[in-house]
Image 1 (cartoon, rainbow, N blue to C red):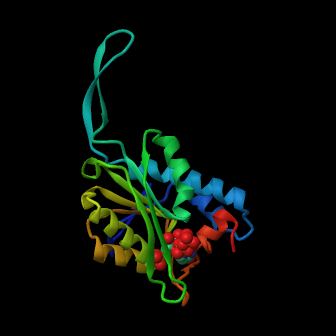
Image 2: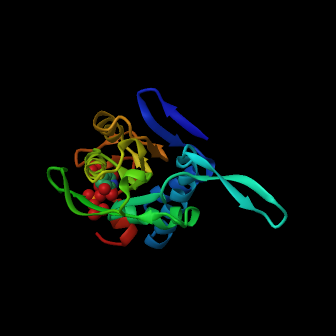
Image 3: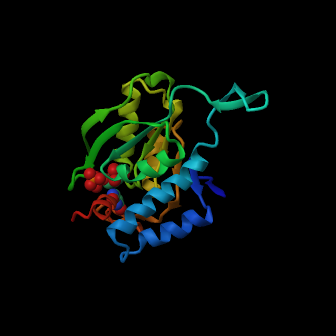
Length: 218
Ligand code: PRP
Ligand code: URA
């Protein structure tokens, strides 16, 4: 259940009914912090199933209780989830339920209030970058400044750009375009491509400030 948009060849929209159902509740301004956090985790987990569908696998022999057979396993070092702080943190646990062996890196970036320019303040990822697949996580892709900066930071640290994927819940056309222009090899997975940004850089219709709704700050 995916949709492609001709204008944005790197974008995959995940149209699974459960993802869309949960996203609609997430958008509702009446949805409170506890439920909001549960929904972000659940949507991230469902999206991860699709976003991992093209991972490379390699053969692996296995002994069943009856005989030896050959199976398959995901190739390379352990997958790495990299939430962009703060709101990306909300997506980690859901995906980790699906991929318990995943390692977790962190990138701290916030948007400067007036200019909307990304400001980075933290970076830590597991070693062995060159052999890992990275899933960069952030619920919101608005101007794209934070996501573009995060991919650039991962690439500077030695992550192969062709092994980075970006997962968000809500994307604005402006953000998908910015990612496509800056990092044309990075696939973007979203649960929705929304209409536009408002004059303050918020996604319309969107879901408001993801970090504030997740952590109950305002
Ligand atoms: C939000 C969101 C993204 C960023 C998206 O974070 O979680 O990281 O904005 O906007 P952009 O595409 O225009 O860069 P925010 O800056 O509010 O930081 P916070 O999560 O620490 O509150
Ligand atoms: N960041 C958010 O949390 N929400 C938006 O709509 C845009 C950026």
